[in-house]
Each structure stands twice: as C-alpha cells, then as structure tokens.
Amino acid sequence: MEKIAIISDIHGNFSGLQTVMTDIENCGCNRIICLGDLVDGGDYNDEVVRFLRDNQIACVRGNHDEFNNLELAKDVQEFIDSLPNEIVELDRIYTHISPRIKKNTISSPVEAWNVFCEISYRIVFVGHVHVPLIFGEKCEEFGSSTVYEFNYGEPFHLDLKDRYVISVGAVGYGRDQIKKLRYVIYNQTENSVEFRAVDGELLPLGFWAFF
Image 1 (cartoon, rainbow, N blue to C red):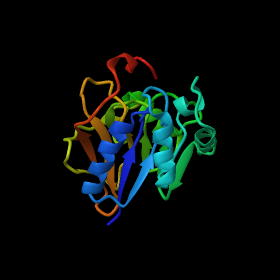
Image 2 (cartoon, one colour; image 1 turned 90 degrees about the horizontal axis):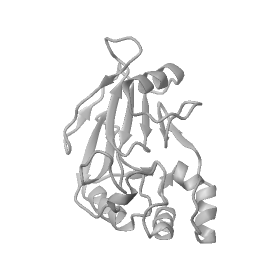
Image 3 (cartoon, one colour; image 1 turned 135 degrees about the vertical axis):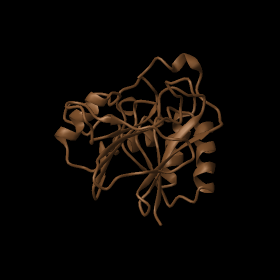
Image 4 (tube, one colour; image 1 turned 90 degrees about the vertical axis):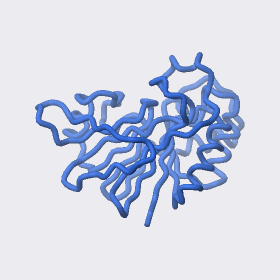
C-alpha cells in the first residue's frame, strides 16, 4: 500500500513542519511530496529547506521560493533554484499554483473547470490556496465543477470515472480561520485522500495577508 503525504506552503515554519512530520510518520506514509513555498514568512527558512533536501523529500518550486527578498544561504538558494515547477506521476500532477499555462489560483469551481478543460490528468494536487478543497469534474452546471465536502481524518474515496483538483492546505498558516497545520494523505491503493488537521505552531496572524 502506497500512502503519499502531500504538504505545502511551509513558509519557513520549521516547528510546524516538525509537528507534521511526526503525524506523517504515525500515519505510516511511504513518501512525501512538497508543493512549494518552502520559504518566506517564518524565521527558519534555511532549516526548512535543508530538512527537506537532506531527507530527500521531492519538492516543486512555489511563487515565494522564486520571488522573495530573503538572504538565504548559498546551498539553500541553489537547492531552491534546482526545483521543478511540477512533478508528474502516471495520471497525477503535483504543482504549486496551477497546471494551466495561465497560473490562476484554483479557489473557485469555475477556475477548477478551466483546469479540467485544459489538462488531461485525473488528479491535480495544488498548494498556494492555504485552504483544503476538493473539486470534481462531474457537475450538473456547465462551466463549473463540484465542490466536495470532507471530514478531517477520514478517507474521501475518489471516483475512478471522475477527475479532481485537490488543494492540500498549508503547514505555515491557513486562510480560513482554522488554526491547524494541514496536509493530505493520498492512498494510491485505496484511491482515496485523507485531509489531516494537526495541532501545532502556526505563523503569526500578520502574515496571513500575503500570497
């Protein structure tokens, strides 16, 4: 059974990352993929990047990784510069903002519909939004998609005849007032995703306004 933990938007929150890593280990995940924005927000940017690098955690580059005013250590900057914009595995794509040519934030059913129209992957995992979301291609309304509800800590089973955009939430901070560290576990064998909400240290509220 392959269980992939998908984390995103750490923003230098090393304490939060350590807490999430403990939860990932307790959940028996086989692999970890990070969807970007490793830095810019907290005080431990170098520590976050070196931890991910030294533990060989696959990462993509986020907009804060690419554009910031930080003075990062040389080895840290070199690692960030080497990161790809996306990771593709079979019928899945992992990226930070969007797999579309036009990188619009995927926070609405309409933009998710645009994604389904433009790409062919069955599952799209994204970060950037800082809010956990599931959009499904099957929808009764033209030009839109279905927003699915889920329960934290419970598997949400994916329909093999549907396609999905899944926003995994954030380790750094959320934008929906839920004061938890959040990430997703994708169970490839059971074809399900499980959203996790973990108690831990978040970034100060003053950083919430920045994208």
